[in-house]
Amino acid sequence: MANAKLAVVAMLVILLQASTLCAMAQHHDSGTPGVMTWNGYQRGEDDGPSECDGRYHSDRDMVAALSTRWYEGGRRCERMIRITSTQNGRTVEAKVVDECDSKQGCKDNIVVTSLAEWKALGLDVNVGEALVTWSDA
Image 1 (cartoon, rainbow, N blue to C red):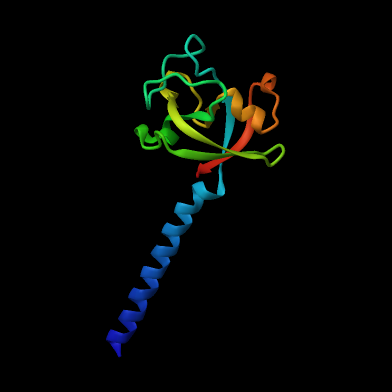
Image 2: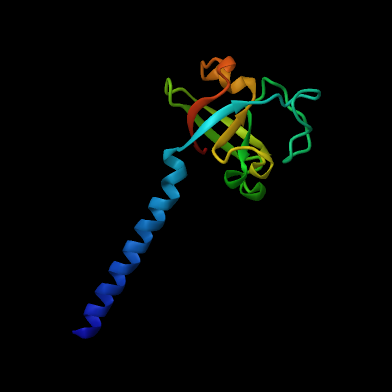
C-alpha cells in the first residue's frame, strides 16, 4: 500500500514538472513583448556586416537583430522569428542575422528590423519605435 502511494506521488510530481516545463517553453510561442526599431542592413548604412553571416542585407530583406539576452550568444542566428504589431495585429517573419549588443547601449527589449518589416506591418518608420511581440517561428 505504501509503495502504491509513493508511486502515485511520484507520478504527480513528474506530471507537475512536465506541465511547468511546457508552460516555460510556450513563453516565446505566445509572444514576448518588445520594442521594434529599424536599422539599415545594406553596405554604407548604419553598421557593418551582420554578425551571423558576415553579409550585408537589402532593406527589402526580412531580417532582424535581437537584444543580447534574446540573441542568446548566437543561438538564434539564421532562425526565423515571428513579429506581431501590437498596434494592428499584423504579423511578419524575419531571419535573425545580428545582435543588438546590450553591453554597447542597446536596451534589453529591442527587436531591430529592416524597413521591409515596417512596411509589411503597415507601420510608419518615422515614429522610430513600435510595440511588438515576437516569438520563435
